[in-house]
Image 1 (spheres, rainbow, N blue to C red):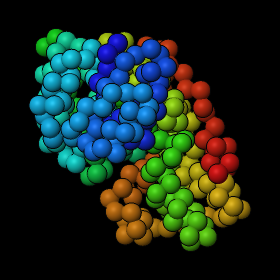
Image 2: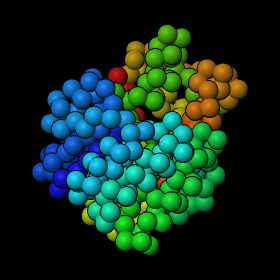
Image 3: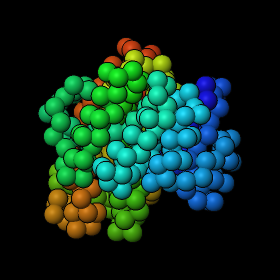
Length: 285
């Protein structure tokens, strides 16, 4: 298939482009700078110059594709909806994969699936009207699919590295929020990339939780990361207020207690995560 990807030069985008090419697809990727263009070209994709606000570029690129995978992170709900609308107008009856996130469920109170009620922190509350509008296209002949990834790890490990590993190395102990008993719904970036490939054949209107099915506590993660960076498992508890001061609004997301199952994607798409021991990977450093 001829596939257009936004966010292709990013952490997840690198993995998705690699997976698409490995499965024999042809990829064009949005590139908002020369640096991004070089990055996607090095991966084997053809760059399309422009950013998420270049709606005409998005529309035209989508019109020449058989499927679109929207990975780029928008600055706001309005920006994301405008981009999604331009892309869906362009792709028409082709497949459109839209990226959400599991944080929209808030605290899950145990293991849940995609049908769990939403209770998002302020950081991601804007996602609801965007996803509703995206999925509504299914009733008008479109082929929208929403993937809600959990907390990514593997490779560059961006969020965990930036907010926990790096500051923890400097401080001499890896932090966890509160007592660290909240669970993180983790997924390896390469497993998630395979879900995007599998979802190209999903039914219109489908929603999938992109999670690995392993939900360790944040304290277990902190201890493993600590061992991996040579701190001997040393951790430190910080209050939510302290975390907010250091991290901003994302602290409320890291403080969520989330457990999700990938059963729907397994049953409908045959997607089975292959990397299910994040603690071992964290401990390797």
